[in-house]
Length: 335
Figure 1: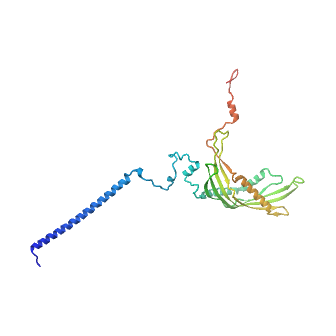
Figure 2 (figure 1 turned 180 degrees about the vertical axis):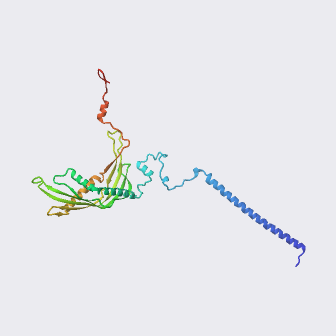
Figure 3 (figure 1 turned 120 degrees about the vertical axis):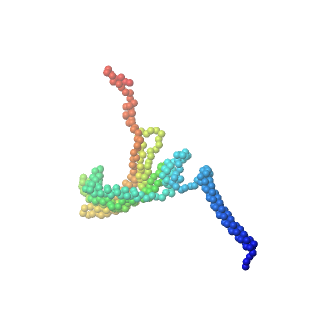
């Protein structure tokens, strides 16, 4: 069907207007999206500069960071904390919590002690030097008149090593002081065998002699050691002698010392493993350890004083205080 030319021109004109409108709409949508994207980027940049680079530091709330640096107070800048007790000062600067800190392993100490003990065991086997030294020690002091010469027949230093564990720091009985506590366990067979004679000096000197053989073995030895630095008390007057600073090593009273004692008394009619003698030796050795090591007694190791003052003796001070004399040709003239 043929349309009039006027209608065709009108339809063509409408078609051209529709294409132009669609193209305009597409161009407008692209420009709006482009401008919106640029505006969004600009807003993000402005906020970033505002809150990251230009914010007032005083208004920022500090966050707590659980690190070693944040838990240690700064004693140099805070004069109120400088008067803290020595215990609190030391524990804060060494990051040690006396209450909540778990016991520590001492494997490194066990290895070092094992090396030292092994070296001493090897040295003791050379020419039986340790056995000869103990023999000379037992016979060198003042020996009772009813005990004959003592001879060492057996000596075994064992094969195991002491094990230390559970090291911890605890408040000391001294004000402002601390002590270290370490558990130890030693399971081995350290053996010492001796022979001697019990001499009967009545009715005359050396009337009879009774042979005695003993074999003493340490089977188990365990307990808790305490190590503490003892400082001299503060005095207002200058002491005549410098006060000592030392390390005190002691043991808790709940230690375990298991011994095995084998005894043989007599020559023809022999008595073996007498219970009374075994109890006597065990009690004696335990009492020696209690008297030497169990708290409140302790083993003292002196700490050298690097700034020890020279204290003049009273006689020397008295001589220095006497008037001096000057000798002249004709005599002595006191000054």
